[in-house]
Length: 167
Image 1: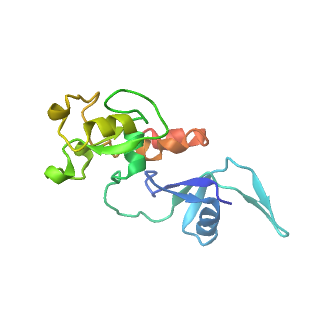
Image 2: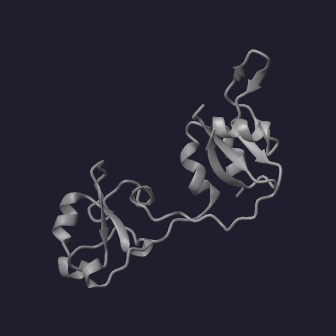
Image 3: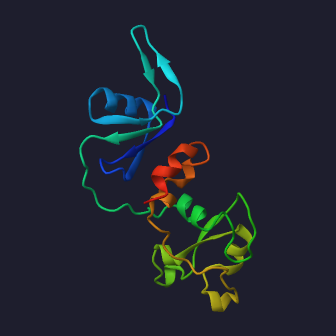
């Protein structure tokens, strides 16, 4: 009941991912329709209920455009779990501020990168030129496309591709 379910707006725009329990509740309350059943059925005493994979809201929800939140996990995801100084892939990564915070650097997408502990220590609280280091890629805000936001679920939910790819 905790499997992810793609929630589409009335115009088929992907807007959220919820769990199966919430999706079934929305279908029974009449707030959403089942679009795709990719997971089989739930057998109750009185009926057989399809387990939703994709649902569509009955009413159009007007909401601001999605944005990718600046979190540690999203910085690692944007940088593909690679140190932006030496190129090493690692599971033990840190977030480094290109322009150090104590020198007035902000905590924004264009100032944070993924760094391995040794490169982060080597750079310390200095600027890139002072530490004689360079970045492999210029940091930028990731695209707020549905494919980037919901694409991490595609490995387990390949049937979502047709709904996510067009947005």
